[in-house]
Every structure is written in C-alpha cells, then in structure tokens.
Image 1 (tube, one colour):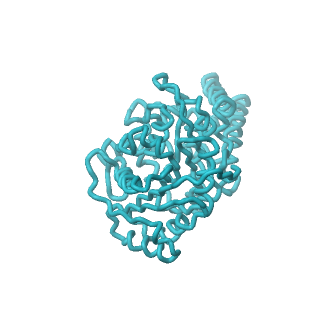
Image 2: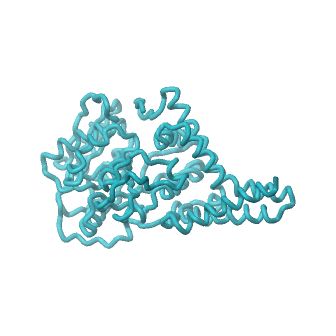
Image 3: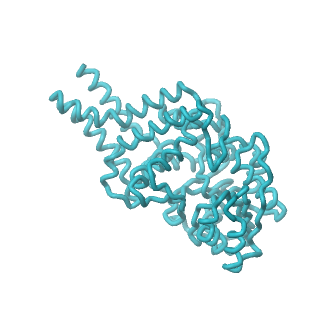
Length: 409
C-alpha cells in the first residue's frame, strides 16, 4: 500500500515538474499590455461593438470609459441592445450626451434571435453588420461590463500594427473584492493560462490559440477571411473559438479535458500561419461582481462541460487528472505523516510547495494574501465539483444558461 501511495505522489511531482518547465511558463503573469511600448505610425479606423443585455447599472462607468478613449484615430461605438428590460438603450444615450460623444455612439435594437445562434454572438453580428458601412480597419469586440483604461484601445491598436497581428486580445483584470472572489477568481485566470499558455498563443508556429472575450481587437480582413462571426455562431466559448478560427488551428472544441491530459495540439490541426496575441491587463478591468460562491459556481458551470465536448469519458478523465495533479500532494503529505513514511510526506510537501510557487505570481497580481496561494488544492476541488455540476446541468437540459437563455449543445 505504501509503495502505491508513494508511486502516485511521485507521479504528481513529475507532472508538476513538467508543467513548470515545459508548458510555456504559463505561471508567469505576462505578457502585460501596459508593458508594451505604444508607437502609432498610422491611425486605422476602429469600430467598437458592444453587446448589451440589461446592463443599465454598469453603462455609466463602462460606456463612458469607451467613449473617452484617448485613441487619436477615428473610432465609433456600436452598442447592440439585446432585448433589455432595464432601459439599457436610454442609459447609453444619456451617457453619450453627458460626455459630448453622441455622434460616436450608434445604438442598435437587436432583432429576434434566429435558430443556431447564441444570443451574444447574434448581437455582435448585428453590430458588425451596421459598423461595416463605415469600412473600419479593425473591429473592437468588448463586453458591456468592462471598464477600459483610457489608453486601452490605443495600446491594442499599436500592438496589432507593430506586430502585424490579425487579432489582439487581453484578459482584463477580473473583480476580486469579496472572499469568494479572492479565493476563486485568480485561480480562474491561472487555470486559463495553464490551458492556453500565452507564450504559445503568441507564437505563430505553435498551434495553441485563445482569446479573452472582454477585449478583442480583430482586423476586418481577418474576420472576412474566416467567414465572419457566423463561422462561430453556435459557440458558447466564443472568444477561444474566434481565436482558433483566425489563427487557423481549426478545432474549436479544445477544452479543459485536453488541458488536463496535456493534449492541446491535436494532430489534425493544419500548420498555423496567422499571428494573434493574448496578454494580461492590470488597468482595464471587469466590473461584473461575483460576491458569493453560487455566482462563481454558475459562471464556471455554464460552460465547463462544453469545454469537455459534452463527453462523459472526458469528464471522468478530468476528475482523475484534477485529483492526481492537485489533491494527491496534500493527501500524500497527510497520509505520509500518519503512516510515519517520511518519503511520502516529503514528496507530497515538495509537490504542494511547487504548485504554491507556481500560483503565487497570479495571487500577487490580484493583490491577494499569499495565504491563498496555499489553497490551490481546495480551489481545484471546488472547480472539479463545478465541472461535475456543469455536466449534470447539461443532462437536465439546463446547460449554457445565461441571462434568461438556455442554449442546447
């Protein structure tokens, strides 16, 4: 029995050594947009598209931050009111008049959702259709809950122009104020970076592709090349689907199960040739609150099983992998101490310290106590339960629920 426990604990240690040395240095909180030098040699025209469904409470802050961007080129904001019942359109108009930017704001009332589309992507599609009339060089796709730093658009355009990118995106800083946000939100970003190492995403020779939906700048010609937003119209994880389509990786179903098995480069992928960029931002932030465990749980459970391609076998594999990677080290430490087996206990402790060191930069980036870095096993256990619940919701016909809509697989 002791030999088996030691073997499992050693395997967990080897996995972490491999993750830290061979997986694109995912644990580093870089690249960051604010660290990029801003050099604008041209001023391309940009059309901002904002899908908004019942966002009146946040628009006085978020829409204001968009309209007051210091980008020196021509840009317009197209806000698509997606059947809101809280006066979203009226609030948006009021914000534009308050900052004397009414000429830059275009409010579009969404028509009925057609079959085969997710609500958000249908709203984005309508915004793009209307914005196309202005012949923009770029579309900037953003969410209505994002407060943009004043130079966010300027930096993104400069990054795209300097690097000749088809797509540039940032993982905005998520709200991290309540206890549950401090416990679980930095881990959400950590897991995302482990799933899609940013250095791999930014390497055109690597097949990994991802984006963060809150802030995506995409070149118009790139969007046209992939067939427009309609090419991903059914995607629930639409940001990564868009990035994979643009980069040319082909398979949009890659998800958490592939990550835990270390399989993020299926052999069916064609050789990518398009350049995309994904980074972090310390200044542009999401205002979406997750004050309780339930709100974060619902956010994760909405798409976790989607990332597993609705496969029970991938779900089982994920549970096993999460247990091996995150739960075995502290259990090994505890069991080794109880059995008086110093080798098991020491192996478990070393592995736990390695994952803590890997997680600490993300905890520090979110300005949380270092104590949370030691909590990764418990956090991973909660995320595993959320993934299991996501599967149950799907089996019960409640998967993909968001703002009153439920999307079938």
